[in-house]
Every structure is written in C-alpha cells, then in structure tokens.
Amino acid sequence: MPDGPARVNLAGGPRVVTDVQSPPQTGNGGRHRRGKRRLWLRLLLWTSGALVFVLVAAALMGFFTYRHYDARIHRIPHVLKPSDPHIVEPTRQLNADNFLLIGSDTREGKDAGYESSTGQVVGARSDTTILAHLSPDGGKATLVSFPRDSWVHVPACAEAGGKIHPPYTGMFNSAYALGGPACTVALVQALTGIEVTHYAEVDFVGFRNMVSALDGVPVCSPTAVYDSESGLRLHKGEQVITGAQALAYVRARYGLGNGSDLGRIKRQQQFLASIVRVATSSKTLFDPGKLKKFLDAATASLTLDSGTHLKDLYSLAKTLEHLDPAHTNFYTAPIANPDYTPPGYVDGGRVLLDTAKGKLLWTQIIDDSASVTVVGSGSSARTVTPTATTPPAATSSPTGAPAPNGSGKPSASGRPTRSALVAAPTPNFNAATHNCTL
Image 1 (cartoon, rainbow, N blue to C red):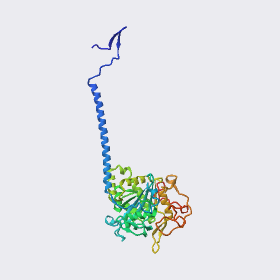
Image 2 (image 1 turned 90 degrees about the vertical axis):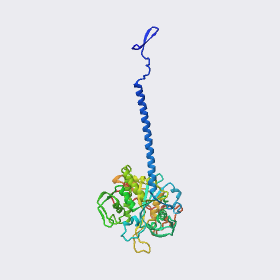
Image 3 (image 1 turned 60 degrees about the vertical axis):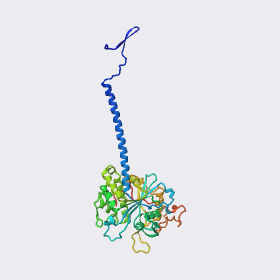
Image 4 (image 1 turned 30 degrees about the vertical axis):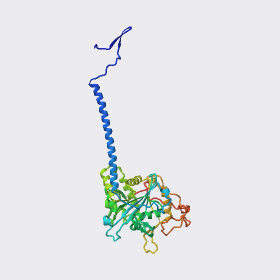
C-alpha cells in the first residue's frame, strides 16, 4: 500500500483526501487502554464493597456492643408511678423526660468500708438525689438537688416488692431507707408534682470506679484543703482528682466551704458537670480503651428502672455536655429554714423546704421556663431574675402537698396564683457565671 494520503479521481482532476478515518487499532495500545479501564472499574467496585462492609460491620459491632453493655445493667421493676395522683397536669408532661438520679449510700457489702467505723446505722440510704428535667426538644436541662436532711411528709407508697408503707413525716433520705427507689420516686412526685419517667442509681464503688476509668476529673479549689475525717487533700487551684479522692470530695461536709449539706450539694453538681464534660469529650469517645473502661465501670454499678436504657442516659449526657445557661441550670430545692427543729425534737439541723418558692420552681420546670437571663458574658456576666412580688406568709409545716397560693386555699388548677409568685429561684451555678468557688 503506497504511503501518503489517498488520492481520489474526481471531475476536475485528482484531489488529496486527508480525513479518511483509519481502521481501528488492534495492537497492544488498545488492549492496554481497555485493560486500564477494567482495572479502575474493578478497584472502584472492590473499594465500594469494602466500604459498605466496613460500615455494616461497624454498625453491627456498635449494635452488639450497645446490646452487651445495656444487658449488663441491673434493673428493677415497678419503680415508676405514672398513675400517681400527685402528678400535676400529667398530659402537659407527656413529652418531657425527667430522670431521678440517686447516689446510694448502702454501707453494706461492697460499700461497707467507707463508713464502717462511724457508728451510723448500716443500711441503704440516698446520699445524693437530683431530679433532672429534659425539655421535650432535648435542648435544655434543669437539675434540682434535694437536701438529704430535708424534713418532709413522705406519702404512702408501695415499694418494688409490693409492700405498702403508710405515710409519715421524717428526713428525705429515710424514704429510700424504708421503701427503696419506689418510695423515693413517690416522695419526689409528691413534693414537686413532676412525673419521674426514668430512674438511675449509682453506688459508692461504682462512682469511684467511673472517675478512675476517666483518669480523673478536674476540680477547682479556691483554698488548700485537708479533711482528716475523709482523707481528702486538695491544693489551691485547678487539679485532677481520681477514685477515692473524688468520692471524698463529693461526700465531705467538713473542711470544705461552710461545712453544710447545702455547700456539699453545689459541689456535687459542679463535679457532675465535670464528669459529663470528660465522659463526652473526644479524648474519651475516641479512645477505645478508656471508653471501654468507663462503660465497664458504669454498667457494672448502675441500677435503672425496667424501661430505661443506655440511649436514654446518653440523651441526658449530651444535653448536659454543653453547660451553657441557655441549656443547663442547677438548682437546690428552695429552702425556708436550713437549721429547722421539728416539733417534739430538741436538736435542729434539719432543712425545711420553702413550699411557695418550690411550687414556683416546679411550675416553671413543667412549663420549661425554669431558666435565668444572662446579661454580658464571661467574667462580666450576671443573671437577671423576674421581679419579685409580695411573698405569702412562710409555712412551717412540711406537708409535701402543693404550696399555698396566698389565700390559704389551693387554686383550682393546682398552679400558684399571682400572690404566690415570690422571687424566682436562681440556679446554684451556670456556665456563664460559674467560677472557682466551693
């Protein structure tokens, strides 16, 4: 075949045709290009398949890991009381989550070593009680601590085993000692009108192990502290405490602050906030070893009601993670007298709750309006509360019933009338105003 462009004889003479399409190549070059395309296709398919496999495997691993840890938790039936007549306007509370968080002081079995030589009664008691309310949209939390020495009217209640306890008047933590979690739930609902939808309890040893699994939790002490009774040692300023020191920190009453149970409550709330921050931080969540240790410790020491699961506690923790005033506030149940002497008693030292202010706080929680307005930011931040109105006469009898409305008679709706709207309770602390105080 002659070289060069093809010539075609047409009228007018031969012309050179330069756009004649060459026949397809059948040599190694074509096969190489097609082979490269097939190779990329195979790599894409293999990569996609491997990615899908990894995602499915991770999901299955996460599912079975969740099932494993959720199944480890001890659960007790018949703790919650959704039909309790003390619940205020139950239909308005349907979409809210209310956790009753208990730190139990068993002083027997594995916890016996902590106060075996104090001469105190051996048995189960609620050392710490916090009601944590999550708004229906999960965007805000309100936590209220109840002083264990509060002098209250404990309603008749049926404990989990079915035994009925008659009503009586006594200290708040006696309800747990007498009737366990079920009677504590009944007491909190009678005091607040708020339906408890989740119950979670952790014992002394479990608390210590969870803090140790996190490699400690940061605290801030404005002064150096040594408490010979608990063995607690703190230097002034920021520090990380672990295990037994953490337990002593949240339980000690003497040598810290003013030595009162109310000061201890604020310290417990601040420490709870620190635990949540550490447990939900990337340093914990993305450290498989630390996360496993924490989950092992937590699930081995938790007691929940039969309908509460790890996912519910995770929802609570995620809400508490961002401790901003717009999201989370910590309160103590309003107090009328911190050194109350009950009728017929010689010694004081009991706490009388303020039923009027308490009724206002419980109503605000049900309405999801229990919050403060923060003006400014950082060190210049301050809180602004609603304008106070004339308070009603103080009550001296802890009835556990709804607060008076100023007229001596309860309002028809069970809500406080205007005369009962005393100065709104303010939080113990929040992220904008919290500083290093005990």
